[in-house]
Length: 391
Ligand SMILES: Cc1cc2nc3c(=O)[nH]c(=O)nc-3n(C[C@H](O)[C@H](O)[C@H](O)COP(=O)(O)OP(=O)(O)OC[C@H]3O[C@@H](n4cnc5c(N)ncnc54)[C@H](O)[C@@H]3O)c2cc1C
Image (tube, rainbow, N blue to C red; front, top):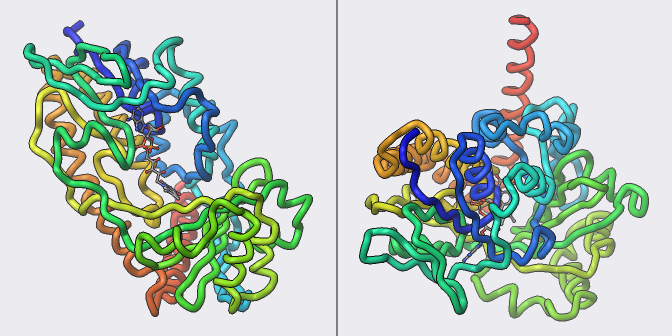
């Protein structure tokens, strides 16, 4: 057994927890420092679809594919596209036919947490800074105390990483897109018409330079986004976020040229409306290797969510870094090779996500979305045909 580095992982999101788990599978200990006070400290966000070559592959490496099957929602992979008058432009023929299962973010987090050794995750530990020591190792600085030394600090702390500034001067830039997020509980029982509108998966309703996306999560919950292409300070001025009832009316006014049955999404929404500005790091973001520090996931390559790749890329980063650390005696060389490979792997998907964000709400965005859905359906049908002929 080689000497393994003492590892700190900053951030217990999907990237950080997958890394901790796969290292654990290889017998390598790591400490996760997570800012949340506990697992249920804040809502974790909506549903994610995991892809075979990345997110699902990482779950295989984590030995969790079987357990994942119990929380995966294969039946909710559908897509619907409507114009603002409520006319259906596209609908997936069979929402359960795809190979990109949905999973609620909270379920994924619980799955990973349940597979870590006790004490691995240090809750309520928000890292303020990372400080170089004279011996070449690193200390983590918290409000009022210090933890260390660590040989390797992995920044898995998302968009506003505290580790990134030690490696790169770049900061995420506003993409021009702002979401106002809302949620609808118990949709099947309380709002059957809206349940049909959303279908088993996601519905996008677009027109007049605005869009609503609503997506089915587990437990008959729907998470929706009212989407605008606006300056960064627009939503804060336009919506009265302190008074949910007023936000509801303001959203209905913003979308007053949409069909009444579509606006029912806002009427049925609960009292939590949240502004989410979509940011991204530059395509091809990279840094010169520095011993003892690296980044994975959004900390390394934050991209707009329209490519649907962010969590998948974060989990694949984790799997690749863990494998290299397990295989190689020279752990610093392993980290440097991981970075080189990650930079090349991610550049293309970051470019695609940026293109998807750029065309969203453009004059031909409807046509492009429709083309994308039809292409994807044709690819799935082809894959199914090939699978049948080879079996
Ligand atoms: C609205 C929206 C929808 C999205 N939809 C999709 C989708 O459908 N599919 C998809 O693949 N991706 C989607 N994404 C992107 C996806 O959420 C991210 O790519 C993914 O969560 C990245 O995982 P991560 O572990 O790198 O970072 P995060 O999920 O951001 O986790 C970072 C963790 O670090 C913790 N943390 C932060 N700072 C500190 C600190 N200083 N000290 C300690 N802990 C800290 C945070 O509390 C958090 O737990 C979406 C994103 C948004 C905003």
